[in-house]
Amino acid sequence: MPQSRGAKPRTVIDLRGGPRAAIPTVHAGVLMRSRLEARWAGVLDRERIGWAYEPKTLRLGSTRYIPDFWLPGQRTWLEVKGPHWERFEKTQALARAGGQVLVATASGVCWRVPRSGKPSQVEVQVGRCGTCGTTALGVPSRGTLACRAPGCGARGVRPEAVLGW
Image (tube, rainbow, N blue to C red; front, side, top):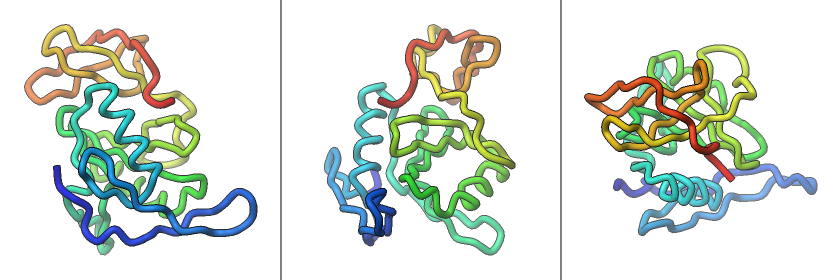
């Protein structure tokens, strides 16, 4: 899995009153920019979802953007947001560019990012695909998930749990 490129401390908002720097943390041998990103990497590991941390810089119009995680087995981007939600417009621009984009929060909840507006309050769920055996994740439609694994696309995967803590 790719390493972080120059983990610079991010500024986060301390709910007790002032900004503080995020604390770079190593998870599974990968240096991440914050403890929160490392915690979400642990959630992905628990659910057996493969991930790459900050695998590449994307161009969205005139803006450069480095999403936190690429989930190759799901063909999905995952962006981790602390309590501040700064730079959410970049995350939304990524969703408008196509594909599934999820936002994982400091409260342990994960939502799908819409192309416009705020995320719905419907949590992302996970289930095991009976066709290919990978973990399917997303927001259920008619009570089931679709497998996004390359070459699969099975529908009717039963959600087993909410993604998060």
